[in-house]
Length: 346
Ligand code: ADP
Image 1 (tube, helix red, strand yellow):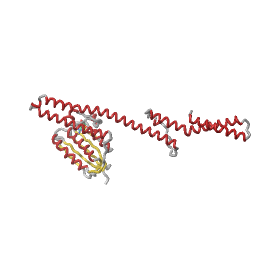
Image 2: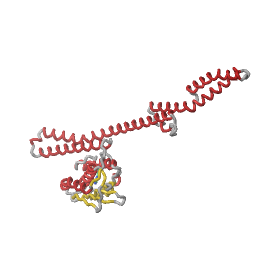
Image 3: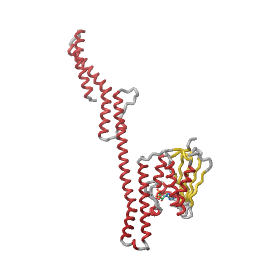
């Protein structure tokens, strides 16, 4: 309740009103004008104190305490700050609101910086761990070759071959890492446009045909009738399909089949599924599949050239389209990875 500004104004009011009161009382011939005048001046001082306190000082104190919280980076109580919201509010309320909004903006920025810092730390840990394997392998094979294996016709070609495989892996890893960091930090923006899903699926199957043949897997597609054009970032959706089909091929046994199916659904969207009859996924892994570097069988993934980032990239691209990846799978029977896209308006 104690407030210096209110006290100052009360003292000025009482001091100014005292001679005025005395003058009036003398004119009105009131007895003891000095005493009665002093009582009146004091009363006016009290009234001035109350008026200044409730109209100005309270809100100044609010602005001051909000600024103190901001300075000390204690944003927890910010929400509790009472901010006047009336549209007819005066300049002081506007000031309090601006201070409060500045606090909110700073809190958002600090939270974002913390998030980025955590992301950076965790990411660096994962990356150095993943890079070690191919780098050590390249180092090991090169040293062995230089130590004499180069002249040994029984191993020299296969060692150079293995060095190259690990160099390819390193390259794939660096590409996927660049991609995922751009997606996770929001640097990669989607550019949705209408496109024909059948065209895209055709391109993807051609691109992966050789890889499917090498794994003795049949890669096909089936488009249901009346497919409307879809809305999305074509290049990114292409990447989603490539990653899902690539997994389908990698995690199928020889003689298996991977099929891309696109079907219109009653909600007006188009559902795209990648169906394989491969090794399948046990239920306990399903919720973690899209985490960065999560692999069920690490050595199988590495042997097949996997980076452990494919499904994380898929998840981010679909999220940027406001979509989710859904997975159904039965170990030993196969998996269905699906997502939907908006139909483009004619
Ligand atoms: P990777 O590069 O290891 O394939 P992904 O992020 O693409 O990384 O996939 C994560 C893991 O999910 C894989 O290592 C694999 O264990 C599992 N997985 C993904 N797709 C399939 C699939 N179609 N069938 C069986 N397992 C799969």
